[in-house]
Length: 75
Image: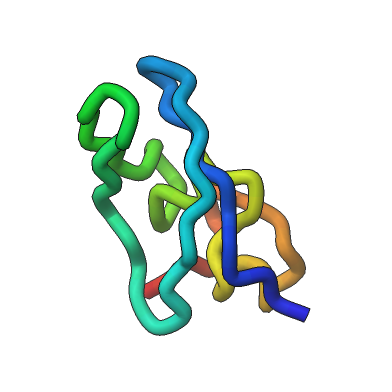
């Protein structure tokens, strides 16, 4: 079963926030609620959830749940 929530951790301030992931689009930007830093995916990741979340995005989960630099992404 696909998980639709992921906890994003800001690499700047360490703030953690549980967020709902979109199932039909990538989320390329995320504004940290702790410090205001705008997070963007790291090189090779398709979205902020794959880079900073506890659970990868739904398309990656559907492909086996592994974050890879050459695997499927959100789009």
